[in-house]
Every structure is written in C-alpha cells, then in structure tokens.
Length: 276
Image (cartoon, rainbow, N blue to C red; front, side, top):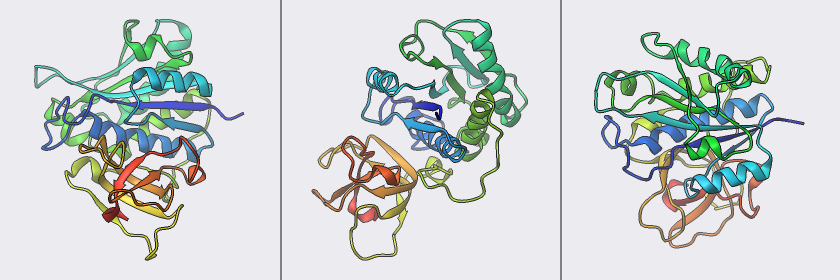
C-alpha cells in the first residue's frame, strides 16, 4: 500500500505574516513549495493531500487522521524582529530515535540548498496543535525566514528548489530512491513564477468550450473559497483541471488532480473565468 503524506502549508490568511517581497505573505509562498513537493512525491508513487486554504488546522488534522496519513508535514517560513536571523528549523513531538531518523532523512537535502550552509535545527515542541494532534508523525518545517533578505531572495521564493528538496528528504525517510523528474507533472507544481508575482495569469487551453476536466496552467491566479467571496484565499500556480463546466457569477471550480474532476469534496477552489 502506498504511503500517504499530508502537506499543510501555512494558513494564516491573506496579507498576514508579510514577506519582505512586495505583495507577498507567508501563505502565498508556502503553498507553491507544498505543491512542488506533492508533485515530486506523486511522481514517485506516494499519495499526497495538500490542506485546502479554506481548512483550519483542526480540519486538516482531522482529514489527515481520517485518511490514514503516514506523515504530516506543516510547511511554514519563520519571522524575527532581527533582520539577520536565519536558519532551518524542523520541529517534532519528542526527541527520540524515530523522530531523529525522520530529521536525519529530511534535514540534509534542505541544508544542501540553503544559502550559506547553515545546519538545520532539531526542536522538540509539544505545544503546537499540528504537532500534538495528528496521529501520524509530524515534521513541522520552518523553511527559512521571510523577514531575512537572503532567504527571501535566494530560498523561499524558489519553490521548485525547496519543494523538491523537501520531497527528496521525505522519499529518503521512506527508503524510496529519488529520480529527477524532467517532465511536466500532472498536478499543480508551483514552479516558482507565482511566488514572485503579484498578479495572476494563465495559459488558455486549446479549446473554445468550457469542459469539465480541461487542463489549465495558472501562475499566481487568485483562488476563492466560493463564487461570491470578495477576497482570495490564496494564489495558485501550476497545473489544474476544471472540476465542472458551470460558470457561477463569473467563476468556475477547479481541482488539482484529474481523477478528482466532478467528485464531491474534491474542489480546490474557485477562479475567475478569465483564467481559462
């Protein structure tokens, strides 16, 4: 049976935990990292769920437990009042051999790409909800600082590099050899342009009709929780699919895996019709 990885990118809200990059905030740059990680893991045969923007921590932990996740991975970036603060921080429920094995599998691949060669830190942290609640082992990732210029310019806004490194570490933990993927993944891979752009864009599919299952490629497109929401929940980058063919108030539903088209509970969110 394939392992199930639950990725939980930060969900603080639009404009919260502002990044040094103009127009960016923590949720906006962590989701593309999670999307790339998911794409790589899926390409190696693992099952992956990414927590939806509309889900709070409790809903995500409940979903992970219900689906039987084997590993729970919150994806965050850190902040500090000191602009010079920077490091990788991986947090766990306890300091024990099983958790050290998880740390030792994941940390090296992230250290290899972190500017300056700073070592990752292991921290026991039992008070965080997404560490003490999931039934699965949790590796809570603080991937650099969105308040540090080096990390902002050379690390957290390169989701392809960071997401791939995180995936490599997870694969190592499950003793799965990493194979470099040079083809376009079949799910949202967040390959970077969206994390640096404040405006959405999309490559239109080669069809004039709106058909469920149509592939669309998005770059920092606003994603809404409903057809009437005034403020986007996040911005999405990568490959998505039209969940159905119904346009409601100028918006249409999308999903991030083709097999989920038309299935209840498998809507990633709503995008404006202009992006298709």
